Image (spheres, rainbow, N blue to C red):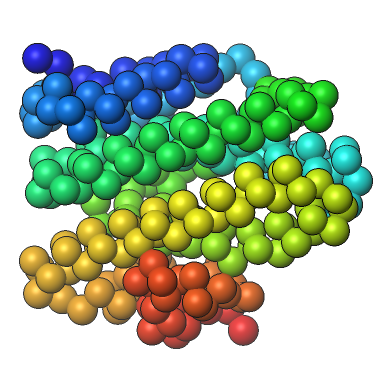
Length: 264
């Protein structure tokens, strides 16, 4: 029987987008059916495989996207979001395969469901790009999305603190406004896709908060101060408003976590 670690590694080693999506969905289904052994006998890679396109650029070389008012601006924004979702597939499967031995089985359930969601999100964004006359890989993309994963590869608490509870939580803050801009531009189809992703991401941030709380409870420490400590050490950016407090609270990420360290 194939192991969960081997299945996660397969996803991370797949460079071609359609193959990564296929393997992600297949792994999630196989785990749910009990077809993968709960063994962590295969190491996760330092870097996931990537396709030849898009060209990956450092943040300071990325072209300005605009705010999505024009069709060109909306395509650029959808492409950037597709790249985030493509990278999020790897982040979910790496979280399961790298740290799963340190958690109950329900942790694997959660992160494989996240990985399947991210694969679906990428697929529908790529499909929408094609309808608009583009495709994933047509534009350059951000090269730094894996940096937080690499810097927290040694520590599940740090990974949970930074990836779902900072990076994905930021999506909860900015997506409603993006949906509204697409609707104002008359691109209702894209707006519906983004709203679907937004509702799923609330659950994903919730999984991060839940398992971070689990680690803190086991260690006998308070979650909010520990989160602040780890974010200060491993997150290079700034925790800045505006915050979608209601969505964050729905995910279990209450203001006592981010309020004290938010930039004024």
